[in-house]
Amino acid sequence: MKFGVSTFLTDQGIAPTALGRAIEERGLDSLFIAEHTHIPVSRRTPYPGGGELPDIYYRTLDPFVALSAAAAVTERLLLGTGIALVAQRDPLTTAKEVASLDLVSGGRAIFGVGVGWNKEEMENHGTDPRTRGRLVDERLRAMRELWTAEMAEFHGEFVDFDAVYSWPKPVQRPHPPIYVGGGEGAFPRVAALGDAWLAISGPPEELDPQIDRMRSIAGRNVPVTVYAVPNNPEIIEQYTQLGVERLLFYVPTKPEAETLPYLDQLADLTRRFQ
Image 1: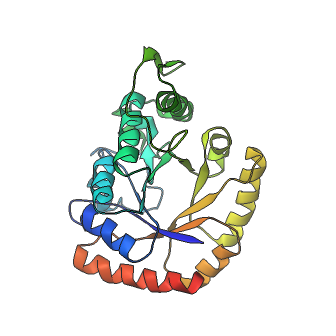
Image 2 (image 1 turned 90 degrees about the vertical axis):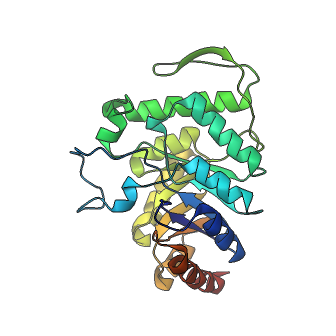
């Protein structure tokens, strides 16, 4: 079992350099960070977690800038988006950002992706929420072409460009792993485009049949990483019985002085399962 961290990096919490270094020093293998470009003041879309939208959603750092900073002070730490909102991202620019992160980190990038939930946010990017799933699929296909072809060309419903050069190419071949986030609606995307399923934490007894359905749809033994796992030994023990590849502990967004002791607790906990 592998263990990593999932969190929101903001201007009010621990810096990405300090966090990345601390995670690696404590033997955790990965850092996955969330993304929101902005939060519209007038918002009709309810927060999936219920209640008021937490302040951290308003203040997230750009994931590729933050992960590049963490890459500069680490050697082994895997650096993931958890998740990048592909429905709000230009594929040509995003392909270059992912490849650049993979290059500067020496091949440690993980591209965690999802369709997003905040309809007003994506509408400000010119995205129609009704077609965001098809849009994400097409953009991922276009990015794979940009990463793997010397002269990439793509013609689709949403993405359309003639032959282009796009460098750098990723260090990892054929490209950094794509971790597809979401529930059962994302299983066809996992099957067609994913290298792993980034599952939202929940009762292990509910996740177990979901894993079976996802792998049945994919037709292969897709690895599973579970996002935002609580600091609970009993739940972790149950997850170990499911054969998932990695658990990502949720680390609250706090200043460095409060974050480091919490990471110490997580490191002590993971030693019981390794």
